[in-house]
Length: 75
Image (cartoon, rainbow, N blue to C red; front, side, top):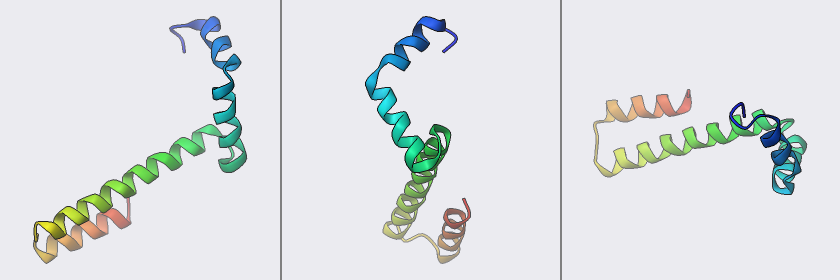
């Protein structure tokens, strides 16, 4: 934001798509930062699930699978 200064900020505020995203984030999650935090959490859970599926497909040892499951549950 610093790169474009006030002019860039005005352009973002005037964009209806940006306003629509901010309104959605405010209504469902209580703010844009909470929405972004939720999206990051979804990415972590998806990555952990994919890692477990790869582990099952490659027949990793049971102890490694327990470790992967614990890591995915407590991230």
